[in-house]
Length: 295
Ligand SMILES: [Fe+2]
Image (cartoon, rainbow, N blue to C red; front, side, top):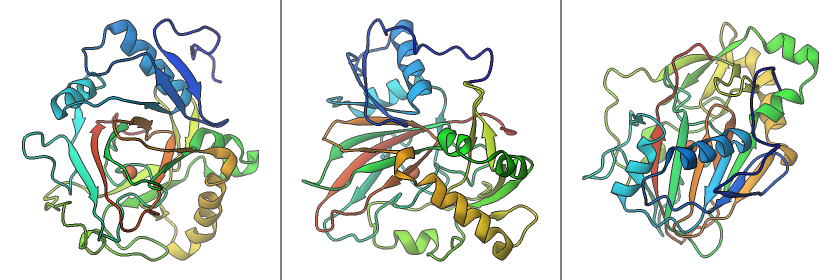
């Protein structure tokens, strides 16, 4: 831990109760009703738990879209998705639906949200509305831990390297374009991103602005290392992708209706598991704006 970083691991929280769900990252929080305005003290504890655990979970938060949006605004300005349209009355809230007949599931690859944007989303809030009887879990990977576990030689090699991240090209290693991927998902309407930048170069090791910790920063949007070809980049990216997915670096969350997850895209990758064919899953999502580059 860098000097000057103050975390609260050595003292109990006063309002919330916290239960870690894995060794690497992730904690469930009890003792907070998010439908009501948060006091500064309660918000401070929740934010500290978020920094310490990278992804936090709440149960039984059956928030209306208005309540969900009010809670989200406590965290910062809302990051609007360049491609996707929100609810009619609440354009800040995206509805992610996989119906009984859809085969494509949004987010079913390891990624960090909107890495393709010049200013990617700081954090993502996902509130479950309808959940299949089994399956549809989300996995998270600890990118601090992934960085820490690299050799000193690899850390030194990666230190100056940046990578190109794309929002709509056919992704490196195969796959389809965004329009092709969503063609079966009738509920998720695409909009023209217009002049918004959807290709961005970011460092492959980024420093978290709140904790000062370094983490790997790559995901399925990552196409190649800046200044190297796709082919030259492939062995390094392939190694890093596999490295980040080691079970020891992950946690897995089992949703219930009204469960809420908040993850930190600056130090976490996530993966929505597409294993509930024939069942419906419906989620509401809000993303919070990130900081200016460089990271
Ligand atoms: Fe995502």
